[in-house]
Length: 284
Image 1 (cartoon, one colour):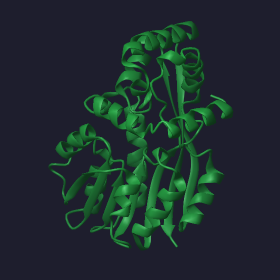
Image 2 (image 1 turned 45 degrees about the vertical axis):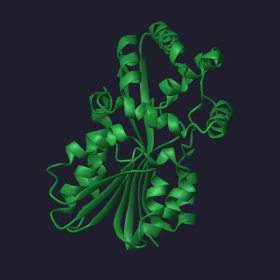
Image 3 (image 1 turned 90 degrees about the vertical axis):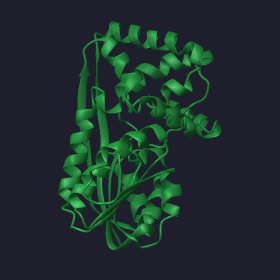
């Protein structure tokens, strides 16, 4: 997807109030999200980042966009019995899975159904040692989100994020966008796109928000789909395509996904690349 098409999609999403499409899709995918073909890749990146933080026992952690609870449980184990994790997500379906996953956590873990900025606005200032947003920060505009993270952090507290950039899954974007544009009658609403364009823009937003960036790296993970059926299953079951199914008119979804499958058959499969920023910042 080129920059102009991406900008048009993003504007259309904001005008149509498309945020709710993400919630709908994640509600539907809650039971299959962790089974998706690419999920081991993103889980491993989350595990590596949390291990790198070397959390102190007793840490007070916030987990934004916690999904099925994988990161919240990792944080609970790192913080230990004297720690605490408070997590949020917009999807009731994902939270239901997360609550079951965290039932045996070694420290208190609470879950709230809320958007990330809404959740942070309700937190006491300077009350957290760590704010995490792993594969979720891209659903918010970075400026307001980073400012609220800094507000919630105690002096010296850290923010840790894995943030998909605008070029993430660009191979899929380039394949799907023309199919959408050729079938405007299939579109119900556009999901908004807030992905930061890259390292420099995110670094600037962090600085304005009150965070001193200690680590900011551009990273990539690749995965190959060897046939159309595996790609179609992934689109239906996973998070990276969230908002797509709900953006389509229900009666046109089958036709659209058949067109995607046909395009993939012509290409002989598809290799997708998760392009993202790994960020650790500290409250100034």
